[in-house]
Length: 360
Image 1 (cartoon, helix red, strand yellow):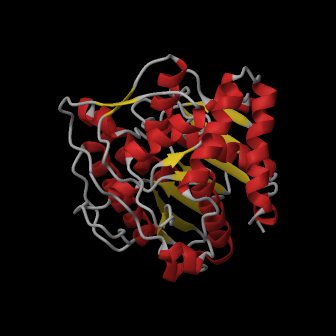
Image 2 (cartoon, rainbow, N blue to C red):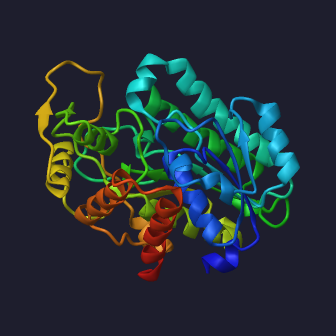
């Protein structure tokens, strides 16, 4: 179904040089889509985009900021995409405390710009905005948040993602209402809220897996800030399949599938930061975890999301338990740190996608 939907479709991805954006770009390329990327330079060194030579697989690689509406709209007008995946963001909690204005400008007004550019581009049929599980008003519940729970956010990052959700809902209701699909417009709009995504090729700052991998390879202790914090860990292929499946459904039946969707772990076991770090050390055969006792800005202790809607309406079910997700992630990093070049790493990354698809 995905091949039939995406073959020869023009797909514009904002944030394609990021971790999730890179995996999504490669997967869409294997499905026969014509992928155009719009993003700042890769956010870290090294980075997935460069280590697998992803630029060769794109129709175009546009260096641009989503805050720059004129340049962004120029990309829309020039390429006239059928589908838009919006992933560009300031995506971390701690930097949002240091640069709150930048965080809101990027995550809120950047989203406005993407939606406005799409609204003015008649070719666009589907818009999928990737936000975060942190968009919810976190009350430290032990059960998962559902799509109709209120938006909120204690810190600037989480708040900005809640705002991005509200902006998207306003555009959907005002300009692309499902009840007027086929008469006033032909656009499906959805947001996707995802948990802590892990996988090979992530070297982002202040993220657990990259911090662990860097520390182990530099013979340093792994410093953990919030050892008992609980997160909905999942391999990157799980939510990406959710995005692609949702997009395909929106293409075929937009009124039914427009709206908000959760994609998170359904493992059943609550994994803490400390659990994951120790699992990585065991898999690598090296590494030592130490607890950081300094004071740090507030982060949620417990955060899980309820994925019943995606499981029932999309027939989306995660393949990997958390242990398997961590194992496949560490397998990828071992290939990289053993000296694999771009072609070998691209083949290995594509191989992980292919194996995932074989079990769907």
